[in-house]
Amino acid sequence: MRIAVLFLFVGLIMTSCESYLSGPMKDRVNGWASQTGFTASANLIFHDVSVVKAAIGRGDTASAKTDCVVLGDDVQSANGNLPTPYEPMTLDLANGYSDLYGAAISCYHDGSASNVQKLKIDLNSMNNALSKITQARQLGSNVAGKNL
Picture 1 (tube, rainbow, N blue to C red):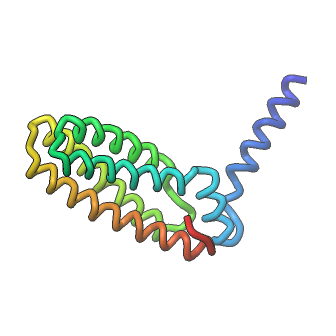
Picture 2 (tube, one colour):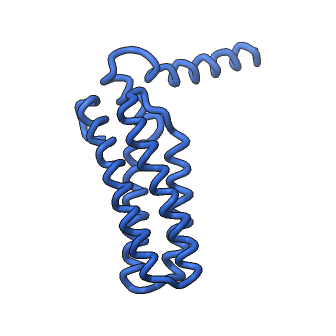
């Protein structure tokens, strides 16, 4: 009985994973986005950057440092959901996540040094990375036929 339940469970997992591995690209992108929680993950990253921006705007380097750690963790989590089924989207996301993670690490160090000017440069780098993620979202949305 346990073996039958195990095979059923494994079969269900494999079926759910396969939903974005084959079929029309629209269905594959929608399946991937749904199974990875892409929209929520992307929204969280944008929120994290806004929190960092607010801390830098207040000159609160200690909060910026902490917020950049959170941002870095969320970017790593999102990056773990790559690749997407759509290569152009994957490339833009990978580049955006890489740049954003680098900016978060730099922000952490600059926050530790209480260097507001360097934190502003880090924020500019974050905004540039977000534009790549935005472009990837748009690519995915166009393919999926809905906003991601």
